[in-house]
Amino acid sequence: MNLILLGAPGAGKGTQAKMLKEKYGFVHISTGDILREAVAKGTELGKKAKEYMDKGLLVPDEIVIGIVKERLKEPDCNKGIILDGFPRTLRQAEELDKILKEMNMKIDAVINIFVSEEEVIKRISYRRSCRNCGTVYNIIYNPPKKNLICDKCGGELYQRDDDREETVKERYKVYVERTEPLIEYYRKKNVLFNVDGTKSIDEIFEEITKIVKIKNKI
Ligand code: AMP
Image 1 (cartoon, rainbow, N blue to C red):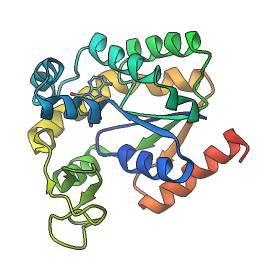
Image 2 (image 1 turned 180 degrees about the vertical axis):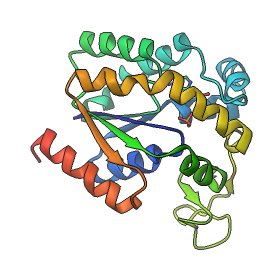
Image 3 (image 1 turned 90 degrees about the vertical axis):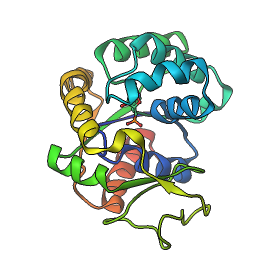
Image 4 (image 1 turned 90 degrees about the horizontal axis):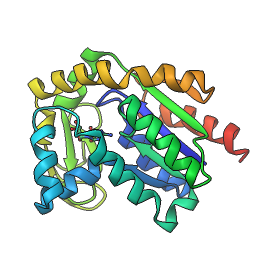
């Protein structure tokens, strides 16, 4: 079972991907997480990516496509994958189709989690992520039990550099221009499912698990 989670920044893709990974053992591939790790390590890739990420822009297609291509070669991907934050442009979607075809794999469902721009800005400015395990909280809607401490691992919660309001507005604009056309791309391929991202985390998860069950016959 191979899934793509589509949606604006802050739609809840990462949260749902982590829950799906826990329930079904799928491999969670988040290009944002991979890039942030490279930035934290100060690798060449990280230095290059940071220039774009800090401005709320997309990292060039060749770089992200290369990252995903390498990651998909790892043997654990046969357990099923959840792509979170990739593809984000038509070129990435077309390249992904080619890569998967070569590997005899296919996308079974694309789940589009939709939320409005106002909701995105409200959510992201209150978002805090764990430095250690990546769990995402919202200090108003989904706060940790202890202030700025991760419930799961005790790690420190921080605000991503690109989660500040001005950058979020740019990221949303980029989403509308570059990523939203993918909804139509996957609708035409008959693999698109729309999920209302303003519902609660558990309600959204329930809807997604229903889709997984239908597609996976489990
Ligand atoms: P995310 O954590 O998915 O919101 O990604 C954070 C940032 O990483 C984005 O704003 C982009 O700068 C970059 N990024 C992540 N995934 C991609 C992608 N598929 N294509 C281009 N840039 C990406």
